[in-house]
Amino acid sequence: MDCTKCGNPNVIIKKEQSGQYLCKDCFIESIEKKVIKTVRKEKLLDKGDKVLVALSGGKDSVTTLEILNSFRELNIIDICAVTVDEGIDNYRQDGVDIAIRHAERLGIEHRVVSLKDTYGITLDEIMQKPNHRGSCSYCGVFRRTIINKAAREMGATKIATGHNLDDEVQAIMMNYLEGNTDNLTKLGAKTESEAEEFTVKIKPLREIPEHEIGLYVVAKELEVHFAGCPYAQQSFRGEVSDVINKLNEAHPTIKYSTLRGYDKIKNALKDDFKKDYSHGRCVKCGEPAANKLCKACSFIEELKGD
Amino acid sequence: MVFTLKYNNVSESREIPQEYYTIKDLIMDLGLSTQTVVSKQNDELVIEDTVINDGDEIKLIQIIYGG
Image (tube, rainbow over all chains, first blue to last red; front, side):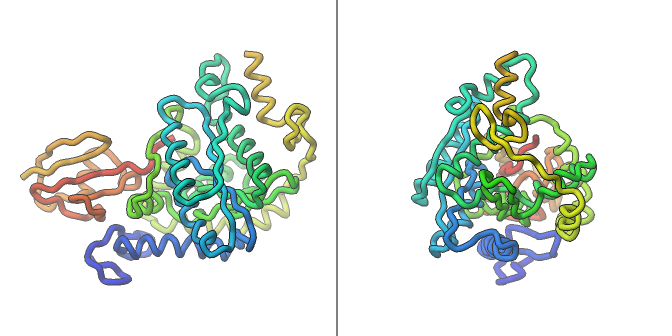
C-alpha cells in the first residue's frame, strides 16, 4: 500500500479510523496540523500568552512542547516549562535530564521542582510509610499544586498538559461509570477555574490517539523517556482503558465518537451539575483551598502523623 | 529462515514459523498489543502488516506502559 496523500510506498501507519495509509512525512504533518486545528477550534491560545508546558520528558509532554513551539516561532506565544521531580529512584532522573535537554535545545525558561524541596519528602519516602494512600493519590495532588504555583511564579497565562485522546476518553468513561457528574463537568480542551490563582489549563493533544503520539516521537526522532513508573498499579483507569481498546479493535472510531458525544453534552452537564466551591486559602501554604488546609498540606500533615 | 528480534534491550534470533509471517503475527505471538509498540524493519518504521523476510532485523519499541 502506498501513502494515501503522496504515493510514497514506504508507509508507517494504517489509520484504522479513516482507512488512510501515511508515509513518515505525511504522518508527521498530519499530527501537527491536527493539533494546530484543535488549538484554533477550541481557542486554546491567545496572542501574547505565556504557556507553561508541564514537561515530564515523556512522549506526550515532549510532543506538546514540540508542536506548541511552532506558535512560539511565529511570535504568537511565549513558552516556559516546569518538570516535577517526584523523587523516584532509578526512574525519574532520566525524564528530568531529557526535559532539561529539550528546554536547552529550544532555549526556553525551565524549572525543575522537586517534592523533596517543596514538601520535604520524596515519593519513595512516602511509599515507605505504613498507611500511605497509594502513590498516584500523592503524585497527582503534589504535581498539580507545584505546576500551578510555578505557573503563577513564572507569569504563565496558560498551562499546557500532554493529555491525549485515550486519556480524555478514559476520564469521560470512568466518571460516567462512577456517576461522578462533578468531575464530568471539569473535562474538556480548556479548563478554567473561578479561582484566579488557578491558571487556565489546555490540552492541545486531546484529539490525538496515544499510539500516534508514540509513533510521532519515534518518527521525528525526538528524545523521550519511554519507561513505566515503578509504582504503576492496576487501576480503575487501566481496566477502563483495556475495555475501550478492546472495543476499538472492531469499532475504530469509538474513541472519537465518545469524545464528540461528551463535547455535545458538556454545556448541559455544566448547567445542571457544576458545583460552586468556596475559595479560601490554605492556612499553611496560602494556596487556594476549599477547607482549612489545601489537599497537598493535608496529605503532609497526615504523613507526619504516621 | 531466521530474523533478529530486538525488544526491550534484548536481541535474539528467531525462526520464521510460516510463510507470510507478519510483524503483527510476531506481536501477537509475544503476547503484546499492537497499540503499545511501534515497529521497525531494518531500522525503518513500518506498518504491522509488513511480512518478515529472512535476515531481517525487527525492532519493537514499547511506547505505552501500563498503570
